[in-house]
Image: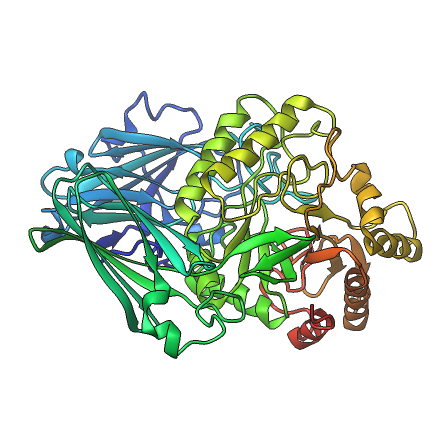
Length: 593
């Protein structure tokens, strides 16, 4: 099952080569590949693998769950003659964890980080004939200070930890560009003024070039402007209200982006030299605003109750890689059919194609990173660097309405009292805000928060009680602000020592998790039922407690689908609804907040 869709929907060009499919492959358990110069020969590559699926998955064709910390890939690529006159950029969507890239036996570069995209200009390394691309990947299985998210560091998955993923897990591709080209674009909307700021970064300093912007809305051109640039960047703010399209054909701000009406503007950016087009990219943006006020979350200046569902981003046949682009889209559409208006992507930086469909369909996303599982000073730059790359790549997506750098004190286990770990979360909180002023940041989703724009609380009940008493306490804890703030889910305080609630909106961001075995998958949940009627009854009972709360500004239910040994989803692992989605929607719609 090949992934052939364009991998970077926020910056689209016509000339590119998809490198997914069959690659030669080898394990390097003895770590001799560099010494023996595997990047200069094809002899060690006796296996094949289907990229972009990790070797632990069925769709890779290898389907081995044994531990192999060092693996190699190799592929011969023929570049079409039409593209040889351009500069060629080799892109990797994501590779877990440390990558070294070679082209025709020469090292091009390396990248550290398992969830973010990276690229190299390979033009200086090309030769006549076909080109040989080789990749060495190091993924230390038991190193707990690297950000691994839900991946287990043990021999087998158990509890809340899933099968490990090693190597390429997002699309590999080559893009043809001119030496002078658009490197990135950044769109910042201001709905109060009806303006969009467009910032364009170039591959190098330009001298006397023209830059042209063409903005359209639903097929109708809104504006077209051209500027002379002699710089490495260009920034301009456009007044979208100037177009008659908004004064005549759209009322009540009908051009804003919301989950109910996901309006998007198309934008074409062209770089010209003496009237000749040197580079051209297509993109899009959404006009939307997120802010907090008086204990509520506002979307486009209106209170907006978030009904989110926890989404782990795993599939049985392909693990962290979606088996198809349609599978990403389907997770969003079925979630909306059940009455949710968004998701919290849990412990994973998702494929940009998921964010594309969230933008297009209208679906809120809380963007989260993978956590480490042990605090060490060496973890700080690793996670910090991933966040810099996350925001650079995903900043433009209107669907992303919050950033979540930490979850349940993972990798910061002593944050409740340890001032060093508290400084760590505060530093990352402020770093994210220094780059992105448009979204709230949650310092530590679950409990033991420090500085945070949202009070994000996890509550699965009190495990030592019987079901009746557990539900009574759950309902009581949620009822008022005073009660929820003094609760101690998982025996952890809601705020870390020295920090208190500062009036930020409070949301219940993990709860529920009803275990229901609906197929041949065994597993566990936070509670348990054995038939459809009991499943619906328990879900309704839990949601009633949430809706009766006087303080909650939204929720995130655990979880969308079963994953490996967890059977606490609304869907099975194969995405089959456990009960009619209309029943879940009716319950979710009970409160029309």
